[in-house]
Length: 337
Image (cartoon, rainbow, N blue to C red; front, side):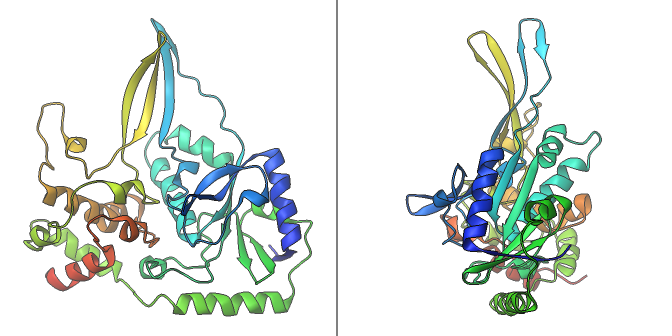
């Protein structure tokens, strides 16, 4: 698939066309931050921030989602086909998060039909990070500021011009009418990518970390690491890959809907069994579970660590917990054998 080039006017026109044919979601200004919102024109889009307040995971895994409806003895388990949607301005770390969620929810038998249906009706247009934030560490966990995992089309800002690199057939269709990129455009993108990568110096040996974690479930260092955590769950709600959910029934005007809602392994009640037993009743056990899930459990289940290095948990933690410092402390404290 050949890279294409676009002027700002051509990209803006493309976005306006997409807004007319599908639900277009993009970063938009909300008070002093940006969030993914449905927009109807390129004029509503704000790309000045590296990352939005929340990740793009709602594209596949909404915060609330009706699974079925019933009234009396009548049950309607059918679901409406999802709306065709385009998510623009998704950073490569968030796009990698979407790829993780798609694989996670497809790995069980049967696969989650709601996530599958949404993915088939979703087009992801990523925006490469030319200047990563100080809290970004995608390269440390296998990602890249210009990564293409989970995206259909990667767009790079060349300071007034844009390089559009199709990754899938969906992406190729979007830009097939644009002119092919010149060697100078591709060379400029390469320099920007090298500069962005050089800004992220942290590296984590995730394979070694997993081995250490698997041998150190009861290691005393967890007692120290968990102390600042207040188990508020902010890190999980803002994480592009966290996937805990609860299912509740809500009745309104005689009709009941069974709804899936985000939940958090950091909440005490999340792990309580029907018997009343709770295997994660202590803050230590819940904090440990989050770290183990990111760097061990999901490696066993999906084959990848489920941290994409977006840094949102670092920015928003009320206790100033930095997952990079946690991982570094674990690598130093946990035994080799």
